[in-house]
Amino acid sequence: MRLPFLRRRARGPEHYPEGPLRTLAASPPPADTTPVSEVELLALDVETTGLDPASDHLLSLGWVPVVGGRVVLAEARELRVRPPEGVDVGDSATLHRLTDDNLSDATPLSEALPPLLDALHGRVLLAHHASLEVEFVAAAARTSYGTRPRLTAVDTLALQRRLQADEHGEVSGSLRLDAARRVYGLPRYAAHDALTDAVAAAELFLAQVAELERRLGREVLLRDLSPQRSG
Image (tube, rainbow, N blue to C red):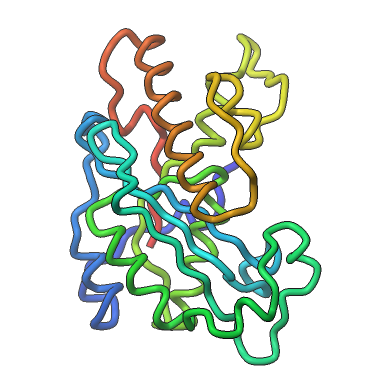
């Protein structure tokens, strides 16, 4: 089943308010026939107060570019986000260890979102269970700009499901980020840190592309990754 955000038809830049969303919309997304080696991606992970973008809030953004088959650590960035007035972290702190105290002087959402949107210019968003990242970014953009951004996304969880499925389409084993990484012999990282998880997803993606290329017997194209476009 395709999620609602995947069915939206792309709008032209003129339909977005002036500022980061219009600039992002003016960046042409890669064509589906583009070799993955020529596609720039931005691996993104978010930490939040919960799992519902309609009622929960961003607390941390971590991202790192993937360019030319490399994870560009020199351009990695993490921003902690101060929740709205009257919103506390609650029980989510037991997962990501972000507390009300250490978020009290964090970056306001209105200042945290533009650097992320700038980093996404001409790039494909990459995440493990990408619908979560897409919808939280969309909710943040609605709060700041009144509308959602134009995004193209690749989901490493969905890709791993395809790679692990047997001839009947059944999947055995976990598809969680750490479990997927173990399939390729990648090292274990501590979970629920936005930047660490973004790097982990980026490394997983490169391993998945190598495996997919082996199975296809040719260079992997963007369309082979089932990219989803929204906005």
